[in-house]
Amino acid sequence: MRPEKAQQIIRKIAADTGKVIIGDHARERMELREISDIEVYRLLRTGHVMEEPTQTERKEWKCKVTKTLKGNREAGVVTIILINGMLFIKTVEWEDL
Image (cartoon, rainbow, N blue to C red; front, side, top):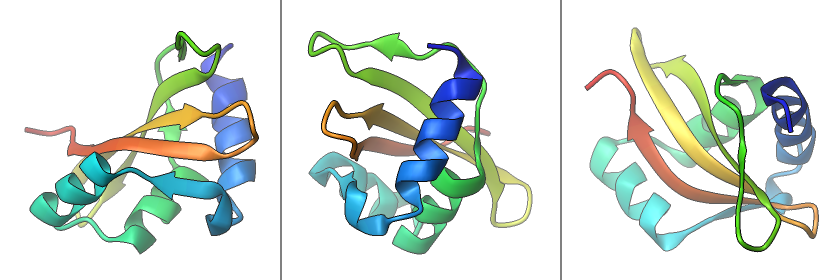
């Protein structure tokens, strides 16, 4: 899958927050890094996939969506496009550290 296609799919799915599952690890990282749910959803809906997605053992697609948040800080959300048409957020990180 090309980055542009993954980005298009993620933006479409993320339009419905009910289709986004934020994992426990991601929630811990969001709290630690002071990144809110609202910021994660905004990032998914308007961020960019810059690198080639990789396929998981389950034939799902994993990639990182990035966007500038909070002034000049760039955040990344490692996202898995699930076979069932939902998104799983694996982790959230600052890219500029």
